[in-house]
Each structure stands twice: as structure tokens, then as C-alpha cells.
Length: 166
Image 1: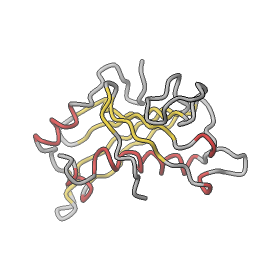
Image 2: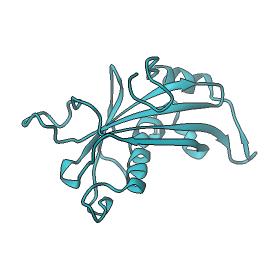
Image 3: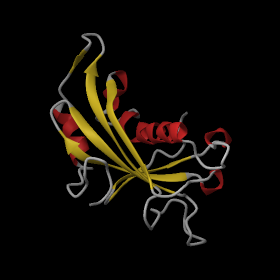
Image 4: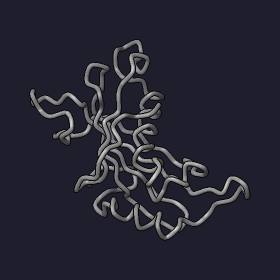
């Protein structure tokens, strides 16, 4: 899915609004776990893989090595688009950890601008360890200096391995 919102850098990371599809809900009316994982993936595409990003080449070779999702509250279809704030909590030679804070796009403060960062505790806190991978060689590869420099802009030293603020 191409996200129309390419997102923007903020002081806390990178913020993208992700649309919620009717099919993302489960029988209980909230966003299904498997669909939440897909929404996280869709959120990081404009941040890391769009043309012009120093990390764009990773769309040809990047694998998820680890994934954690914690739910603090349910999210429903009518609360979309979701605001997904992303940041880097760990950066190493061949991999990095992306932290996520997911909030409803329609905040409790009625009239809030949809493009403004949501306030309050996130409903979902997650993390993924992404590994740079050379598909042709079927081997890990080192992050390039440009990739590392770009990712360092979003490094949040106060975040733990599962994302979120400590």
C-alpha cells in the first residue's frame, strides 16, 4: 500500500499517518494483531524506503530479525488514520532497531490537527530489528556510512529495545 503521507521528521523521530482499512478490524471491532504488524511495516516504508532516502536501497535487501508488540489500549477503525512515531533505539554495523509508538489519529482533544503529533500515552509500543541483507550473496551486509548517518538522526538514546520511553 502506498501511503499518501510521506511523513516528517520530528524532535522525537519520524511521524507518519497510516490509514486503517475496514479489513484491519477483527470480530471484536479493534485492529487485529496481524494487521497491526502490517500497519507498522507500512509506516516505515515512507521513512526508510522511499526514493531519495539514504536507506532506500535497503528495500532490496532488509529482513526483520525480531519483532515485539505491546498493547496498552485497543485501536479501532474510526480512530484512523493512526499516528505512528518511529525512531532508532539501537544502531549497529549490520542492523538497527526501530521503535514505534502508535496513537489514534483522532485524539481525545477534539479539533486537534491531524498532522500534529498525538499527545498522551501510545496505544501500541513496538520494535523491529531490521538487518541489512545482500540478496545476491544471501548474506548480511554492513550498513553504508550514508545509511548510518541518516539513521543516527532518529536515534533516541532513552528508548529501550522494545521501543518507547523508559
